[in-house]
Length: 184
Image (tube, helix red, strand yellow):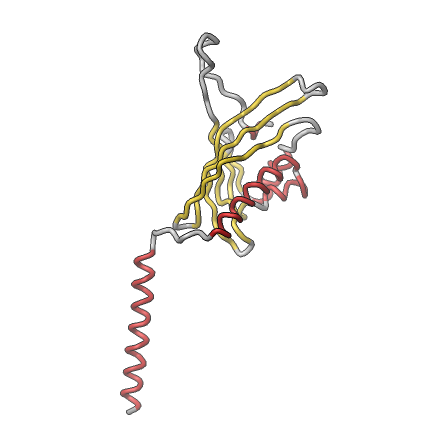
């Protein structure tokens, strides 16, 4: 009788293991669904990103802490990777008293096998100088890879894609490109 129970237990265990392996194989490479809370947390991540970049709060670590420890920001000019390099970048881009502000909008997020991906529009407004006489804008979008960590959602990678546009008819034929936000 004990051999029967041992054999039955082994068979049940083997079947359970095979069922789990089969389920994992079916979902391997497929994206998990994102919950409404996941979406809200990713949106808050993008808000903290802009605030950290505009303020250089906590010596640039408010900015760097929205990334994974090995996360990276690709500016179009350079790739900034790792917590301390991102903090230095966050300190470097602090806006002046009258100056640059990022406005992020129209974020879309989709599940991916690694966590989530997203895109978000950006416009940076620069009204510098004591009279605000220097005025400029930079536009484009971010392409993101997000991962869920024990501390919440973080950017694994954020890349800035700048809009390059031709001037209106009658105002010149060459395409114009403004400096990306990294060059502030």
